[in-house]
Every structure is written in structure tokens, then in C-alpha cells.
Image (cartoon, rainbow, N blue to C red):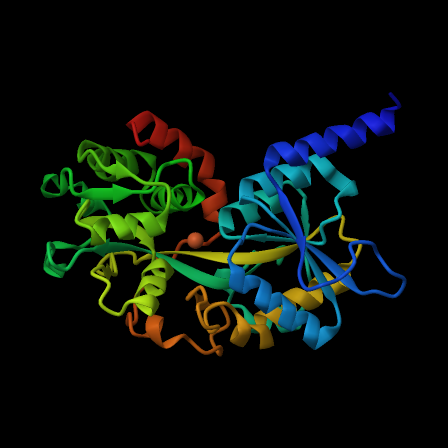
Length: 349
Ligand code: FE
């Protein structure tokens, strides 16, 4: 077998192993045509409405978006393996930590764009402008109002109180949302306090681990748990379908540092062959496209926009205002390995 054939087979097997699913947004031939403007996106978002948003971008600019989907971890693994050969122009993640890791490994390049600097607040983008947050997702305490009074709730750490023993639903440690949350605790309090005052007390309460925020909410609604931690937009999705859905949001740590907020965001890959189109996509999503993000589409994703001038969906506006912790989003990547080790040590499944 020739070396190049072996290499091609190897990368095919790798893609299969990573379970990466590729699709093209909109009806279009898979092969490049002369003069056809394209941008190739590796996306860790797999929400249907995202495709509608990208179709709007294509309508607005004539640039076709080719989307390959997978978990953030799988896509970074793929970028590493492909190196300079990657077809990806853009990496889109649902977590600042993976964007930071990709940037630190040299997989993303800085973008010098006044439009992006003016549209996206400093706190939501890389200090070196290698990635930009486009939407915000708050990780909140959720509870069943028939079983819990909001006055019983206060902080993430207080979910370790023995009164919540057997009543707590959590996402497993393998999920990026949990890793980013625990990384933010380490950034705020250090490893020792995070382990002894937050994670070990949670584990002592014998939480039920459920690897889906939606199923955590459904379990709380059905009385299988009384409290849990999920992203805010899953609650909004349920309320959009059923305004009487029996789960409420509680904004944690409002008398302390504030609530943990992650981003979904994008960076241009170092090997991008369609660099200008990639920048246009990010600029469009950060400005005009903010009004067409999944938050404002019917049946959409209900995240908070990153651009402070963009409209906010009424359902999530109804959750009220809240204080966000001051931790730089890039810290989620820096402390991610320590967060994973800490949870393992503490017996967090
Ligand atoms: Fe999500």
C-alpha cells in the first residue's frame, strides 16, 4: 500500500472513530466549483436552528457554509490530526475551554477586526483575538417549585448541604459543561476549596448523574430529583413548549462572585484556505447575524447574545438580570485538566 493511500485510509478511519458527521448547509454540490465561495466549519453545535442561521448567512453573502459536526473534543482531536491539511476554516465550539485549548495548540490564528472588537466585549473573546464568543449560556441551579422554595437555595456550593441528599441531579464529569463549571470554581477558589467545600459535599449527597441537561429537567419535573444544574436555555426550550413546565431557574452565587457563564464561539483555523470568508462569517454572526441567532428564531436555542446591542428573546429576558462571575473565559481551558483530575479524585462520576 502506498504511503499516501495508507494515510488517506488512516484519516478516514479516524473520522469514523470520532463519529464525525459532515453535511452541507443548503442544497449544493460537494465538489468545489470555480468561483464558488465557501467556508468550511467544524461545529460542536448540533442544534437544528444553527443551520437556518447559516443559510441566512449564505443568502446575505453568497458564501456557502459546509458544516462538519462532532463534539468539541472530537473536533479538536481532528484538527490536531489533520494539521496543515485540515479542510476546516473555522472551529465553532460550545465551550470557551476548548477554544482556548485549540488556540494554545496553535490551531487557531489571530483575527484583526475592528468590527469584532467593537461588537464582542473583551470578556467574551480571546485576549489575542484567536476566538470570539457569539452567544452566552448561563449554568444555573434549577428546581421543582412544588418541592423547593427559592429561599432554600443560594450557591452552587450549598447544593452540598446534607438537606439535598438524594435530591440532586448532576451532569457527569465527562461532559464539557461540567468541566468548565468546575474549572471556573478552581479559578475562583483554588483546587483545595473547590474539592473540599463544593465537589466532595456534592458527591456525599449521592447525586443522580444524567448526561443530558434536558433529561435532568424532565427528571426534576417528574419528581425524580428536586434540584439540579443545567444551562438556562434548556429551561427556556421547555417553557416555550409548555409555559407550565414545573421547573424554575435560580441564579446562584448572586451574593458572591456570580453565576458561571460559558460561550459558544468561533475561531479561524491556522490552516484556513478560505480565511476571508471565515472572517466574514464570524463578523456576520457577531453583528447582523446576532438577530438571526438561534435565540430569536422560533423553536430556537434561547442563548443570550454576545453583542450587547442585539435583541434578547422575551422568554430569557423574563428570567431577569443576574451577576456573572468575573473569571476570564479562557480560564476554563487552563484549568480543565485540573478540573477533570479533581472530580476523579473526589469520586464525582
Ligand atoms: Fe447545550
